[in-house]
Length: 302
Ligand code: GDP
Image (cartoon, rainbow, N blue to C red):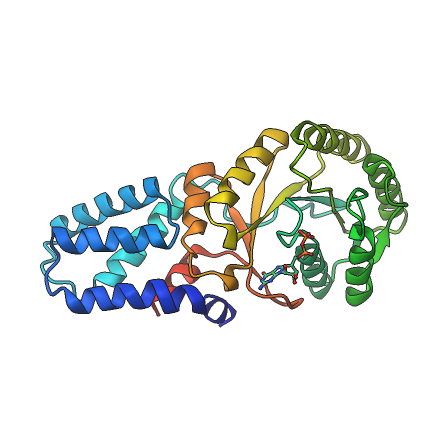
């Protein structure tokens, strides 16, 4: 239900246009595919993915000897899911420890919804009965620490912090010590999100990564990159930069409720081959859903 609600914009535009198209065209012909292609491109599915999808659809139509457009939506949905899942190694679940401390590193550009996502994750883990702690590793942006503290209060989770301008790696070190002392299950670490200075960003992330791994061998267990779905293809460029800076293990696609271009999920998966692990469907603490390609695609056409 959350999925359906959060995807209202994409459904209102993309899905209803596909439905109109299907109603307008009785027969599945070249012109139908051309218009479908346009709609998919408008939804930010991405050029290569659209081409692949259209080719697959044409094959399927031939194979099944489909002549008219009635019910073609289910063939489209099925192919969308198949394309999303192609080459998939991960089932989209978080790779956390059964025992002992798990560390999640959150990365992403300022404004994409990183802090909000940390708050939502904390609340989610707590609801699962896990103990959670936050590390205020964005010591660069004014107000970032306070903002995280607000989320800590809201979710009843302790935030380990130092003053603005201090070394993020030192914050991580403190936080891991504290987390171990208090037998915390999951430590979520915020990081700075300035992309203007790529070299600094890389150095900082590398150092933070190293400290975490030294204190908890094998950690961070997840490096989650927050991307803003409303920024479309720009999100892809950001993802590539972060991929160069650190080992991104999963994506949290935020603000999916705020865009009609929900196809960006497919573009991200196909271009980067990093699984989308969660999607943000609103500003509230409960508006974070594990990403499930079936629910997503079938939710669009249901
Ligand atoms: P940060 O700078 O990356 O930490 O970004 P914030 O967490 O401060 O979020 C920036 C803005 O985006 C805030 O107004 C959030 O309420 C909003 N936001 C975050 N996630 C979502 C989402 O999934 N949906 C919507 N509609 N807004 C979101």
